[in-house]
Image 1 (tube, rainbow, N blue to C red):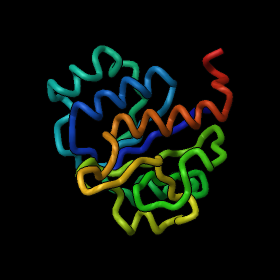
Image 2 (image 1 turned 90 degrees about the horizontal axis):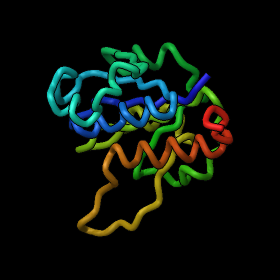
Image 3 (image 1 turned 180 degrees about the horizontal axis):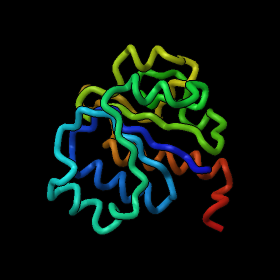
Image 4 (image 1 turned 30 degrees about the horizontal axis):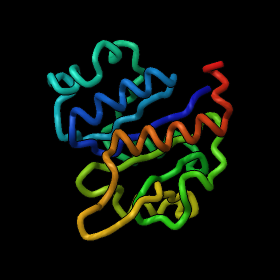
Length: 156
């Protein structure tokens, strides 16, 4: 089993390419929920994902509902700047799903309200100039915290 990264309606191809590369390097399944703000054949995806894309385990869904029907909501963690709990307060397990929203607006309220106790945030200083971290950085921070907690068992 492995961890799962879920991108809900990603918008920027370079971020997605970087996330694909991170997922391949960590044996993490990537779930992508349409619509995307780009084509998966775009040069920016290939450039940022390099030659890792051919090794990626990517699963595609036409809607959040299609994705949601297939997995246990108790294993879903929703990354949002609107959460009270820190991402590092959670006890992650193999098979968990770390869900991230689009770069320009984050996860919509209807998704964040599915299991509010599983909404988590990455601590950062907020001011009038800052909304959030870059999506690919946020995925890496969340994923590596989960991997640290499960003892990097596949990387020893």
